Image 1: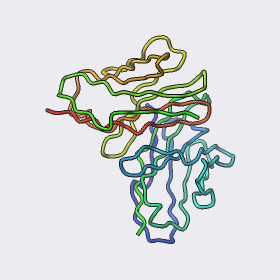
Image 2: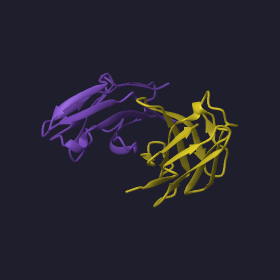
Image 3: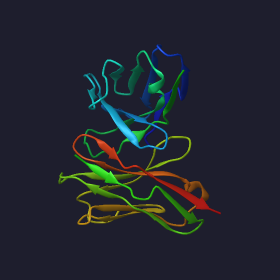
Length: 117
Length: 112
C-alpha cells in the first residue's frame, strides 16, 4: 500500500522559533500533497494544498507567510511554522495523492505533534 | 461548499457484534467521493473504504462495508464482527473538486 511518512513525529520548541515538518511519500510519486491541522477532539481542517513545482494554495484564514510550504519534489513537501507561538500548538498531518484524478484516495502520514512553549 | 455530518459523537459495541456509524453529506457536485478513515489514539489516519458517487454497488473492504444511499445523501459505515482493536475515532469525509472535507468524527469503543 501507499506509505506516507512525516518527520519529526513530535517537537517541542520555544516561542518565536521556526519549526520544519517533512512529509514524504515513500513508495509513490505525489504531485499533490495536503496539510491538515487537528486540535484535540476535533476534526481535521485543511490548511493548504501543496503542488509540486508551484505555489501552495492556502485555505481561507491560513496565513501563508506563517505557514510556509515547499513541494520541491514529487516525494517531499515541507511545512515550516515560522515564529511559532503557543496557539500554533497542534497536531499537523499531511496526506499525499498518488494520482492526478481528484477522486484518488489520499494517504495520510502519521502526524506531527507540535508544542510551543 | 461541502458538508459532512456525523451525529454520533460516541458509540459503544460489544466485541464480535456489528456496528453502524452514521454519516450524511451535502454537496451540490454531481461527481464526488466518500471516504471513511480510522484514527487510533496514535493519531495516524488510516484509510478504510471509498465509495464513488457513480458507483452503483456498495463498497466493501473486509469487515468494512459502506451503506450508500445516494437519494438520502447518507454513507454509513458498517463494521462487522467488531474487534477490540477497532476502538478508535472514525471520520467520514467527502471529496469533491478540490478538497477533502471531514465530519466531526465518532469515537467507537469496543467492549470485551
